[in-house]
Length: 89
Image (cartoon, rainbow, N blue to C red):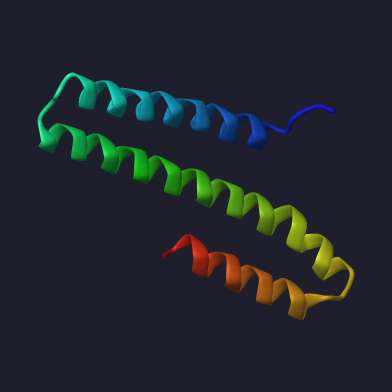
C-alpha cells in the first residue's frame, strides 16, 4: 500500500520531533541551562501540536466525509467536536 503525501509529511514531522526529544535528552545530560531546555521543550510541544492538527485535518477531510456521504452527519459532528476538544487542551 502506498502512503499518501499527507502521511509522509506526518511521518517526516514525527521523525523531526524524535530528533528534538533526543536533543533535549542530550541537553540534560550535558547540564545545559534550564532556559535552553525549556525553550526546546516548548518547540517540541509546538511541533507535536502541529502534527495533531495535520492528523485532525486528514481525519475531517477523509473519514468524516465518508460518514457524511453515508448520511450519518450527527455522528460525524459528535466525533469532530470530541476530537477537537482533546486537541485543544
